[in-house]
Amino acid sequence: MSTAHSPFQRYASPSILSYLYHMKWRNFIKIISFSLLGLILNSCSPPDQKIYSISSVGRAGDDLSWKAKNLDETDWNQAKDLEEHPIFWIRSTTEFPITDVPYKNMGIKIGATGAYEAYWDGQFIGSNGELQTATKKEVPGKYQFYLPLPDSLAQPGTHVLALRMTKASPTPGLHVYYMIDDYFELTRSPLQVSKYMFMLAGAFLLTAVYFFFVFLSNKKDVSILIFSFICLIFLALLLMEYLKFYYQYTYPFQRTRLEIIGYCHLLLTFLIPLFFMIQFSFPWKKLVLALLGITVIILEYNYHYSFDWIAKMHNLLMWICSFGIIVYASFKKTKGALVVLLGFILSMMVVFFMPYFYFYFHFISPFDVSLFIGFILIIISMLYVMSERKKEERLAYEASLVVSERLKNELLKKNIKPHFIMNTLTSLIDWVEESPKEGVKFIHALADEFDVLNDIADYKLVPIGQEIKLCTSLLRVMKYRKEIIYEWNDFHIDPNEIIPPAIIHTAVENGLTHSLPGENGKIIFNLYFEKTASQKTYTLQTQAKIRNPQPMKIHAAEDGTGFKYIKSRLQESYPNQWELDSYPIDGGWEIKIKIKGQ
Image (cartoon, rainbow, N blue to C red; front, top):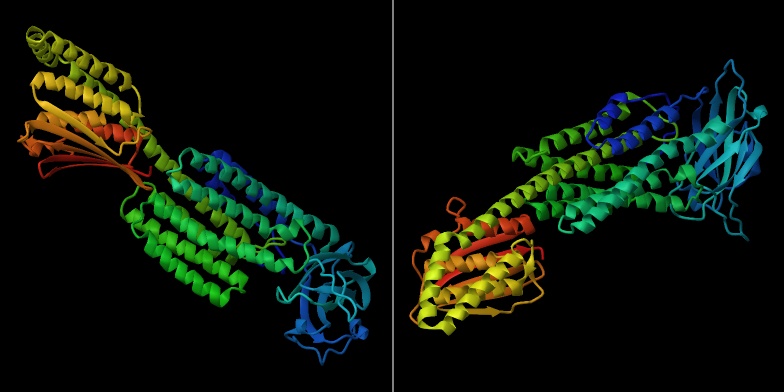
């Protein structure tokens, strides 16, 4: 953003810092609060001598007599497009007010897009770069350059700074400004400002790296990656805004610096609203992003080179769009939305009203300070949203573990309860008496089912091959118990796939309970597997006569132990990333399990 060129006054805002400090993330906020406090207290001291520029005029051409203090400037004017001429002059008049304390150790900081020789009251005081001549190319000057003023030339009264300039690089546009103060204060204060902003930058760098590693451990939550990028962009914005304070670059790079700052604001215009869209499950993401993109394209096409103005427009677009999303979430009573809404209102109040209190800062405009404070409030709001969401996910996950464990125990009890054992033993006695060989097979089938069920019951995920083995063992046992032919088929199964244990087995049990043999005297189970880039689908078809289709429907109020177990296991392994459906088909019933994001 632009640099202020007027005198500055002392100002501190402990109320804002107190609010920041008492937020939930104390360590993060301590760094931010300390940095802002140091920035405000160390860089806001008013200059002892207030020095103003009275007028500034320019003229194309070259004449060394134009350096004189008392020069007739009748033919001089604002002279636009001076940079189109091979060489030109700019003269600025400055008034040193009469004071009780003499002016000593004074210096001048010149910010200019060009190479120049500087003359103070007609005397040469220094040069920046090398001017272009007919035989020599220009050596670009530093964008900001510091020159000491001899005490003999820093006396009360009117003074003239004359710059003999060339500008070989077409970008950025020509502009010149300067500040006069104690020389050591001019050179030291920018570093005092920068060090506190670098503490802020370090805090955001650590935050960005931390959340990037958090994303690597949970790649399903894209909002974490977006937040990490937002912190990195804010880091880049801080570094680029304060680059001129700690690095003397040549003036052509000023255009590149402003471009980088502009693109940082542009990225934030999209990423911050997108973050809140994801966090608050906003339904019209594509529409809003499309409208935002069209608006940004129009602005960039028409006002790309108005760097400060378009950066403010990008920030305004970001705030309006995000504010609308948060208001929608508040209307829907989404948890945490009201707190975020308060944070956004505070951020906009800081950005819009702080510059109007006429509190000025050395080397940086009030808008820049208020903008960074506003951004910090937004970042804190984003941290709050993520913490609330993670808290809900953790509580839901812990609840699902408890429910899953309880239902698992209920399912195991169901399989070994006395009437199941008694019915199985009764069938086994009949088989041993009638056909000892088949009775032995019956015993092996029963043992296989319990062995597999016991092996996988305590695992969160198991290979699909073990799940299929459990299902076929169950069908062998039921074949001897019911004396019905059960047939198992599976299609396109990937043996490397994993699945929560016993969910297909439970679905098969459900089919056994509610099915009668078809016309062919069989009950057939077909398991299909399909995998796409976005999801996996398991489809279990039961080809049989359905005794009573109604109990097989999946409704929360009607779920039996089996379907509760399936849902609990899916939620435990794939939180909110699954679908379970059950419905009749021609010649039987179908249960479909979809696992998203795999």
